[in-house]
Amino acid sequence: MERKVKEESMESITSRLSCLDHLYFPRALQSNAATPSQRKSILLDLLSRDAAVFLERYGSELTSDELGEFDPLNNDYEINWHLKNLRSKMNPTSEDLRSRSVAVKNRRLAYLNRLIHDGHYFSEDAMREREPYLHHEYVGKFRDLSERDMARPGERWSETLMRRSEEAVLIAKIREEQQRLGVAEREWIGNERNQQEEEEEDEDDEEEDDDEDEDEAVKNASWVAHSTEVIYSSLENFQFHSHFLCCFFKDVA
Image (cartoon, rainbow, N blue to C red):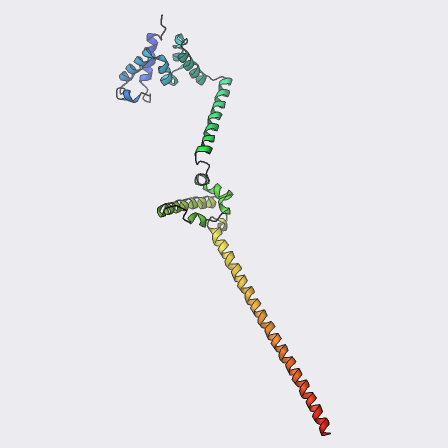
């Protein structure tokens, strides 16, 4: 004799489920499931034909007592699996919780590995887009922002303009976060470049001053050398004339 759920239990279960507005129905049946009576008819037909599929679709909406009505069918492997799975979710044991935790971790690890190998989730551009301020603090502030404004090989002009527009949005987000955290204005993104330019200008001014000092020193050295040469020349002339006069006076005497 074929075992099945009691008729009154089937009526009770399908009547309650038919009043749920969020209940799932296949697309082919959605147009015929507008009213509770239509939904009940569809549910009752499915429960009578295939209890395993009924549990798969609507088992999560059943109560513990309603699941007990399916116990006469637990000789069926598929139905028995659904019953155990649904009950473990309703009243999980410590072993169920441990197994569930392991399964979740394995799924997360598999998804993480897939992102690493197949996707761009951990690419620098993607990470910068997700957390622009953190990227700036650990990586971005050590790089020259002007590199991001330059056109890339093979990039169309429209793509360059779009990338620059997106870059401006990211910079605005970074600066907004810096202001919120109270970062000194001289350290705001974009200000480092101005500060660097000012430092370079100061260095250029210092170099110009040094050059002027060197030129002045050269001029002074040249003047001293010229003056020394003039003095030596004057001394030589004086000595010559003194010697000439001495000889002249000797001859006269």
